[in-house]
Image: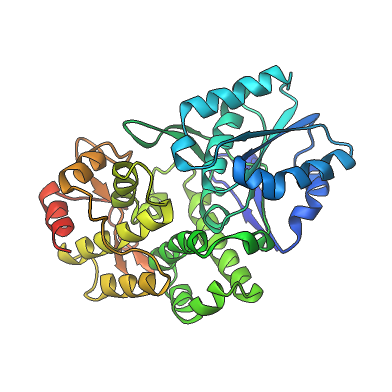
Length: 367
């Protein structure tokens, strides 16, 4: 199926998200339709390149495309300026001109880094996203956010750069470990909380089929999450309004990632963040009673952590939150739910809430 992202601010940058099994085997045809180029820089990490990259290179070459496979070591800790610079330098050394395009083949880290390379290489070249993890398919490959982490915080350097097309092939999820699958499911839970109570109920009822990787359950999961995120980002390309609701769980989550030196996976950190931020929403009278417990219950069923790491320190977490991109005028602002299926702001109020540090501290201390 094809899900259109009709951008309001830049209509000519609107794009399609293709969702169907077997799409990766049709990539040469998809490129011809959506992103013809003189050459392609296929950017991947050291893990995904071995599983899918080399085969894809052969397919592209057999179809007559010039392609260069550029890899970097897997892991969030390699999502850095140094990796961005190295990939850009290697593209220059390969004499790839402004008529080239970047293909991002991998999970969320690859999506972000390769997207940032595409956004900045020779002042910007076309980008194709080919996500290989659940988190990447339903979240990071959609919306045009690209960037790298720096010592001061996560994703603080980057650019908005929309892809020409996103190719989401659920068959690629077959190689995912249960840990990586669960990490992606955290973002699906977030989508249900902020936008669709029925979808949240589907996740509650079908989690076993999803973990068993039953094709119909996985395809429904990918399709609905893609629809939700696409609808939000289409109306707010640069996160100046409603798109902020997609950050539910991420303020606390990013702080946990950063203070753990990225030993906690992004999806795991977001899961923990949703539990704490759900409790905070209830304590502030924003969310209905029981919302936080329902979120916690489904995350536990999905084998995701729901408490901050034992070694974490509340002062360090709050310090990390102060560096969050959503901080305005020195205030920590959070995207919070009103109920399952509805975010704060759906009632006409602001999309984020300024929360006193002391209130955050008390929630983090009361485990």
